[in-house]
Amino acid sequence: MNRRKPRSHRPRGRVAGPVGLIALVVIAGLTWAGLNAGGGDRDEAAAPTTSASPPLSSPTAAAPTAPASPSSARTQLAALDVKGRAPRTGYERSEFGQAWTDDVNVPDGHNGCDTRNDILRRDLTAVSVKPGSRGCVVLSGVLVDPYSGKTIDFLRGEKTSPAVQIDHVVAMSDAWQKGAAQWDTATRTDFANDPANLQATDGPTNQQKSNGDTATWLPPNKAYRCTYVSRQIDVKARYGLWVTAAEKDAMTKVLSTC
Image 1 (cartoon, one colour):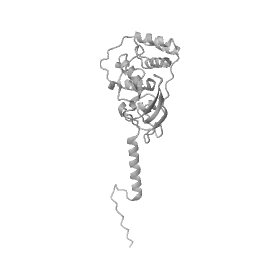
Image 2 (cartoon, one colour):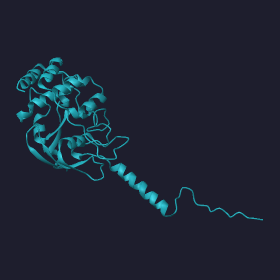
Image 3 (cartoon, helix red, strand yellow):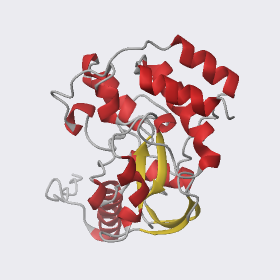
Image 4 (spheres, helix red, strand yellow):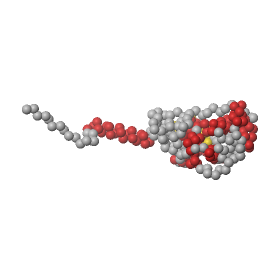
């Protein structure tokens, strides 16, 4: 009589030998990479990446929107509603969503990187990125600031990052008082992260601007004013925001010099 050899019994759920060890190392490595992808500057309250499918190679930030010609900008401006400034009541930064979130339906949205780093990669030259961040996190670069005309060396760090800030060309507070208070949160979040409305600039110059519109603030670099005002008009036209009479007069004055 032939007897069957008894089967060897291994505990279920355990992988034995060198093959199992290699598998565990690979899984651990993939987990670490997933947790450390993307990111942002702590001092800028950058949002974590939220894309379901993070990029496997360095993402390409959307190119800056070409400003409208002076004649097109004047046509857009003429079509904007002219109203008084509404109260600032209820305005909070949080009304425009999580700062620098990637979870938006605008260019660069869902690309696996937060918005601040998208704009830094777009506007800086000689960019170096953090290893292991899948090409997202900018460590250093050079900004030729269109607002001030200065050349600024950017170095990522708690004390050095504020030297380069990301300006909302149409300030969020200004938008709130000119139509955005009636938007839903998703629209406000898109607005706050739309590359067409964002510009890397000199930190102190951005602080000077604060929430100003064209009637109260213009870039010190006069050569950029036509482009700046054209961008503001384009953003307001896209999102259906209005202008005040003083703002429209200031915009018309700038466009007359272009």
